[in-house]
Every structure is written in C-alpha cells, then in structure tokens.
Image 1 (cartoon, rainbow, N blue to C red):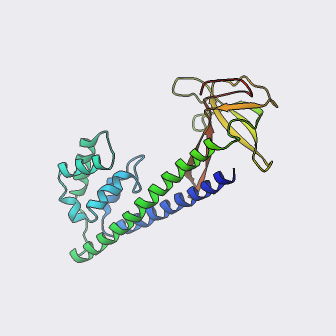
Image 2: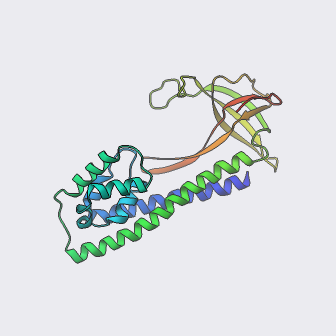
Image 3: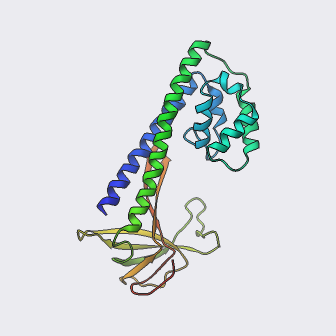
Length: 247
C-alpha cells in the first residue's frame, strides 16, 4: 500500500503541474493568439490535448498558423495519434486560423511564439508524466500481494448515476453495484475501499471475499474551481474467498 500511496501522490503532483502549465499557456495565448484558444475550445479537447500540443508545436504564432495547409494539418493530426474525423478537424482548424484577429507587431509575435514553444514542451512532458504515473498506480495495485485476498465485505449498494439519479448500468445493460471492502495492508492497517462490479455480488456482509480482475484508475475533476482527484476501483466480479472465478 505504501508504494501505491507514493505513486498516487506523485501522479497527483503531475496532474497539478499539468493544470498549472495549461493555465499558463492559456493566459499567454490570450495576449497574441486568440485563434488558438478558439480552435481548441472543444468538448473533451483542451490546450493539454495531444492535438493542441502537436499543432502549437508547428505553428506557435498566428501568422504561421494561418499558412498551414490542409495537407499539413492532416499530417500533424495523424502524427499525434488522432484517428477519427481528421479531415473535419483539419478543415475547421484552417478556417479558425484564417479568421480576422488583432495582431501584435511581427517581432513581438515571433518572440511570443518562441515562448509558446517553450511552454508546449513543458506541457507535453507534464502530460506524459501524468499519464505514465497513472499507469504505474494501476500496475502497482494489481501487483500488490493483498490485492486479491485480504478483503471483507462491508455492504452492498447499487451505484447511482449522480447526474441523472438513475441506476448505473454498464455497456451491456447490467446494473453496476458497489461493495465496500475492508482491506488489510502489510502493516496490519485497515482501509475501506469501494469497488464497482457488474451484477449483484453473491456475498454477505462480513464474509471474506476476492475481487477478481481488480484494477485501479486515477480520476480527476474540477468543481467550483477546486481540483479533486482519487482512485476508483473496479472488478470483473467479487466472489467468496477460495472460490475460483474467471476475470
């Protein structure tokens, strides 16, 4: 558990650093490159997205961005890993960059573009660090010697969708249940962990159980300007200890 806690804290720091750099880049772009902000104001896509980082790396100022051809934009989007809607994305970006905006003096614009390149490099490193640490947290949890044994059922409850108030279901339409488990680490400390699973687990409160196919995912969200994060756990099934089940 100590190794998991160390990695989780490191991942939290990386997420915070990524957010700080993204905000710094946004404030900088407002001063001379508003088209870049408009270009990446898309749901699920922000300045820390792979698309934004890739495009800004080759066009860090409005004059350079306005000269990007559709072929060049398609190439950049493919290179960063985007696979869908590439033509639509390239067409939209070209239209946004070709729009009319106020400009700084040419030399000033070039200087600010150089600063943008430096920020993008830092942001790119921060994004890779946060993603890598998130994977490390999940891997460390899966390798923990107690990950599949020292667990005790504390209760069952249907997991509700907080946005709609409806019962949560998985992609196959199965009801998602949450069970609170008490887990003992190597130092004898007890932690309560909420684990989600599809279908009602056939276990009773106080029974030793095994979460099969247990994985952990680091999540982050912002509410009221305050950033929050945590680790969510999910298992393919939860069975009584000693019972063989397929993950």
